[in-house]
Image (spheres, helix red, strand yellow):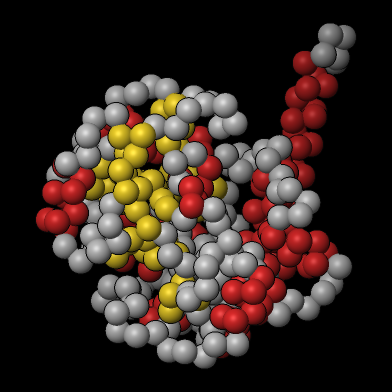
Length: 329
């Protein structure tokens, strides 16, 4: 079988090299779409591609957060161009753990027609204040959370796409790549049937937070992109609460940051837990980092670049609309 991965990434220069190198120890190739990064993400991806890794690099400049649409297109390309038998939609902070590739292939081959697979998606945390710019060392310190995640069951898993996705023109990847939807409206469209694969075969280790600066970039830039796509967070959502706290100039604690991905109670418990990861929890492959720079101490340049990009695109759209109106000169 040919197993491919697809991803849309933005401003992930601290982790994107580890993401690509690790997941290519499992997968046969990847399509990675850079969504207007203003840090070194695109340059790192191109450097990895130039090493002749099986990596297809693309770039989009749309200011809006159109993850579902971009990932759907990339997945269809992987099926059509790379002749993939299964496609794993991933984010840059997600790392496949596969004890046995043949066993995984056997399980994927047994998925019935008209179904996709779901795999476990545990969250891992690192000591946020102790990151020194060495992402390899940081990821080796990641440990699986003990508390229950805040997510409902439907989004505690990630989707793995099968040929049934490729052959169904109505199938699209849901936001966050947690499901497959048979239609364009996620509120009304039915879901494709699925099969759950056991975590003993495969899981996606999710490391959403690496240090305070990365948290600020993720929280602010992603919200701006969601606003541009008319997909803003609900006012009471954890990410919106964190964004509003940053706007007010509040100093967020580790528990505050973790609360964007865990229940508030679990976040408080995990923030005070200094447990080291067990050998069974470690997931990172033995990879060599060549292109990853030290973590930037100041997130402001990346955030300002995102604001500048968004405003420039909105102004251009307004001018284009004005020139298209009757009587415009």
